[in-house]
Amino acid sequence: MINKRLLIKHLLAHNDENSFYDKKRKIDISEKEGKAKFLKHICALSNSNPKNNSYIVIGVEDEDNRIIGVDFFDDSKIQNLINAYLENPPIVQYENIPFPHLSDDRVVGLVTIRPINEITSLRRNIWKYYGGSVFFRDGSMSMPKVFDIELKDVNSEIVSSIENHAQNNIEYTLDGVFDFLKNRKDYNPQYKVFNEYFVMCWSGQKKEVKDEVFYSRVDIELINEQVRLFFSTLDEVSISYDDNAFKIIEYVNLGFQGANKYYQLEETLIKFNNNASYVIETKLLFKPPQFDKKILHHIYNANNALQKKLQAGLILNKQEELDLKNLPLTYLICYFNGFEDAINKLQDAKPFIRKHSEHAFQLYKEAIRILRKIKYS
Image 1 (spheres, rainbow, N blue to C red):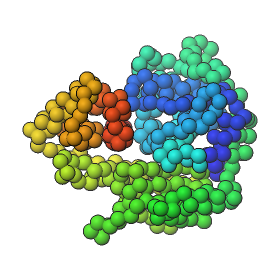
Image 2 (image 1 turned 45 degrees about the vertical axis):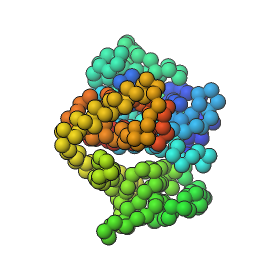
Image 3 (image 1 turned 30 degrees about the vertical axis):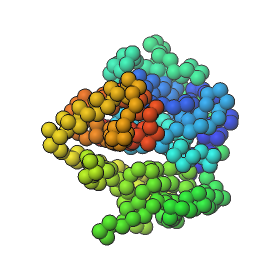
């Protein structure tokens, strides 16, 4: 089993960007341009490595390889994006890798691309790239190719060597467990060994509601691979497990004027097999709450007026400061209730929310994360 933190270190230490490896400071697949560039790199790396894995490391400075990290990113729907836009799509996995020097909410993103030994191309137009386009790696660049298209295996040996040097061992596993228990000591840390092989650690602030146990500020890591499977400072989560599986149900808090309610968002089931492998299955549980349209029209117009005030740089009063914190999730509720332009309004407000309130910006990112989960289901 590969220790993903070690793998990233080996990629950064021994190889500049090349035909099987790319690095990014960040990616943004919330906009068409960001999606298009991400798909281009996936296509090029898959075609340039038909026989071996290729990788994208996200959260690294380009000039000096300094690890700065990015926000935790839930990849459960990213393969849907790949399948929607690529012909002969590779298997793509996005993992969140914690590093000791980063803050709790920051990780390094690791994208693993497993090819299928077929030429991958764009299925349809996106941004400035045309459907049918084929990309390959030319050094550190992902370039279009329109003639002499042939898959060549040139990297299998070196990639195999890097992966072999990143294999996990007992020392790394024990160190990982002890580090987790120490770093999360204020949040009821626990661990369990599954099938005598996999070690799962998790932590969270525990509370009981009507005989049910919920956790907030949840952190869940698969120690063998140094992969963070879940992290949130905002959500409520229920956790259950048996000898062969670990289940997470994620809840979101939605509502107006203090009359909020928790709604099931998604179930994640991690199944541990006897052959030293595991699978992660996700199932969307969310049913959008429906509200009175007259009330929603009032809230929608109030949000728009608040956004205009932010754009004009005017000072907000106390009530408007409170409304700003609620703005991301209220726009989201409006969208779920048929206000199609609410998401565009929310995205337009992003730079003003970021500038005005860190807490409101965290809620903005939470709203976008919920939207992404639902959109790609």
